[in-house]
Image (tube, rainbow, N blue to C red):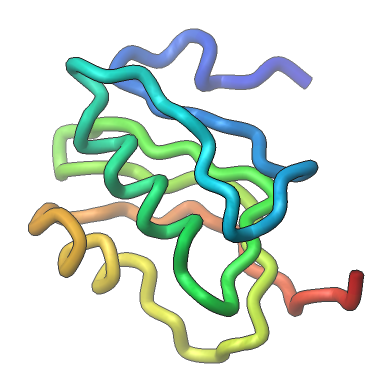
Length: 101
């Protein structure tokens, strides 16, 4: 499967499947600062474990794509992104219950 993030402009994408949930992966500085801020903050949220997370610009603000393992029901990633960065978000993150390590 080809990763779409390789061809999309303004993308901050890190595969975090092998990293602990509290480890923040480095992003590039510069034109992707907003995406990286959102990604780092989401990855640092307690109770959330992203197997994959991609954040990129879109006409409406930012688009979130990935796979989230979470035990908390009713988590609103769109609202969280708005609180983090003050931008609108489109949520294309698939959520599944967190499995024990």
